[in-house]
Length: 108
Image (cartoon, rainbow, N blue to C red; front, side, top):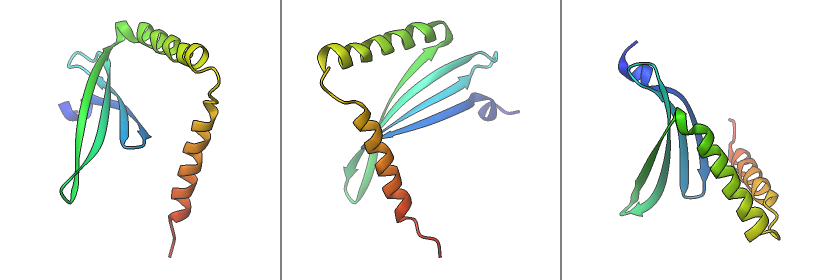
């Protein structure tokens, strides 16, 4: 197995409007694992687009602390700062957008 095959183990993409987030599990030469979180933003340039990327590395010893802090922070925003917002609407909107895209596909 060459180095490129060994490096990326798992990948998950989350589309969010003009942004896309990539969660990639990668391995080191010593078969240890870490997570990269990449934000990619699309910007128009000329007749096409350019992508601005920001990457963050998260190591196994910090996984639990990171997830806990993220959950606590999101919960604080939802309950303390924006208690009147129905966050479920965003999930439903995303499903509707995916359904709209799927209905545009035509088989001939």
